[in-house]
Length: 62
Image (cartoon, rainbow, N blue to C red; front, side, top):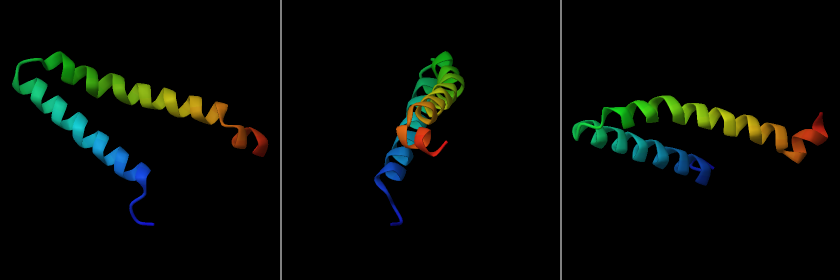
């Protein structure tokens, strides 16, 4: 399948975050844009590590 639901959710989230970042910067809230650019990738990285460590299927394959 070309467009899976996960891919569409990730694309939609990216567009929404870009719009929020641009809107906050245009209204003068530069720190919110900086927070989005720094903290959200770190949060996503931590969520990915958590998923890999707690997925029972991956535990069974080890």
